[in-house]
Amino acid sequence: MRLDNQKYEAVLDDWQASLLLSYNCFFITPYAGARLSRTDYINWIDSDRKRHMSDGEKAIGLIYGVDIMITDEMWLNAKAGFFDAQTIAVSLMTKF
Image 1 (cartoon, rainbow, N blue to C red):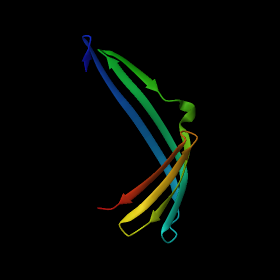
Image 2 (image 1 turned 135 degrees about the vertical axis):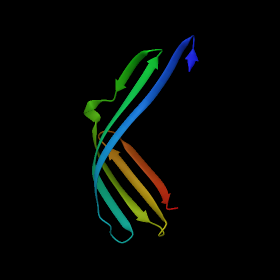
Image 3 (image 1 turned 45 degrees about the vertical axis):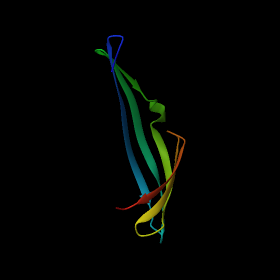
């Protein structure tokens, strides 16, 4: 993008690695584990490059969740994240 004769570019670089343990119990699969994550925002104004790194003290987090089978093709997922981020997510998933 050009503005005032300057070229602007940006990239959001997001990396995550997780290790989860789960147990399938009939139609419910609870899981828990740890996550290592890092996000960098890199921007350029013309040839001047700057990298803004995420907080290294908040790189490790915990994940808790559950998958609930609705049919053989569809399930409900609910999960929460702690320490590196405070998140809650619910989604309806399907195979196709």
